[in-house]
Length: 350
Ligand SMILES: [Zn+2]
Image 1 (cartoon, rainbow, N blue to C red):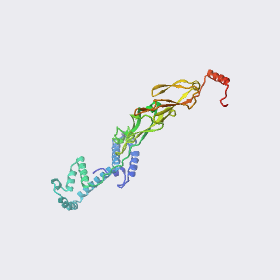
Image 2: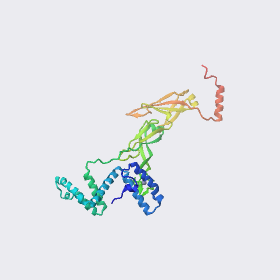
Image 3: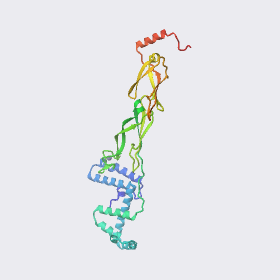
Image 4: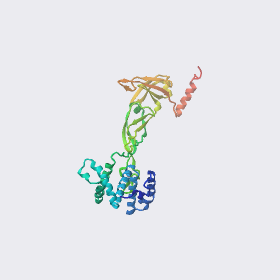
């Protein structure tokens, strides 16, 4: 006789899946080898409990198990009340014979069952039962657990201005949930909670991934990398990976078609005197001439230093911002004092 999983979990035959789970959780608290003691009997008992839970908590496995149990009961009844059952078996025989007779089908079901019972090899018996279930219920719908898509993962990526303008290949380290390698997602090993994943059946793992970041990305924009999120369940598809773009000094860059608009700070004396200034752009140094008396917000256009598309190059538009020093030396302050003293014109007089 096969083990009665319902008795093992102490639940009725019509118990709902929640009751199965509740009963199992209760038993884990009292019968787990870590709690009840690591004796062979307790380990064996807990193995049975886990086996019972795994079967009864899966609607598919439970249905199969219930069918087998029904056949066992049927077989037991038959041996007790042989005459009655043989009559029934005979009743069914004409039906069978209407079909083209195959030599092996001459055996009635009950004879086959008798044979199976005498064979003490469990595998042969269960294979035989499986065959019976398949043959007797060909049209029955199989239970398929619902597909669950994997969750998306969001991570932040910081780019330099140059990387944001030109695009780049960025290696990102993404924390994925993966099936536990030790227990293969089964949560238990020999009746004990898997020490590797703590019974979760899955573990988080870092994966390195190279992501191509296209040129001209904007501050705060999201780049979607399909299928690089967490894994799905029951055939559900993988989630996506989203990279949220953070650009260093993002406030200093804008785009207008192929033109790049950059804000460049200058010192107050550069604004007054003019002269050459230089700054970094696309990995090269750009030198430009400032006119004397350049004001804050004044724009300079440098041709063909913008983005390139189909052989056409945009311009770089420099917006000037007069940057006041946060800290001045004693000498600088003295010079400003002197400048104040000798200045004849007030800025508030016309
Ligand atoms: Zn595990």
